[in-house]
Image (tube, rainbow, N blue to C red):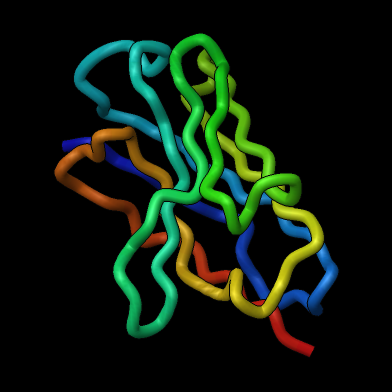
Length: 116
């Protein structure tokens, strides 16, 4: 079963930054073959895809995070990162990484709280 381990979340003030990391293991094929994404789920809301990076390194972001978040990947280490700058209270959520489309299993996520 795929294992996804997210880390790097925490409490940050509005305008602050966080860097999230995700380590993937036990994936069926080479990590480099997968489109990877960062998702988030805010309280009372559905999980949404906020950033994705394809096998060529091209990135796509949801409008609400454009210009503030940057997704990157290291295929040699099977990792995906999300650099989050200029954080806003509405970015508060549990953040997950997964493929796009997602593997059946999800990691535990990492909680990001943006609050003064």
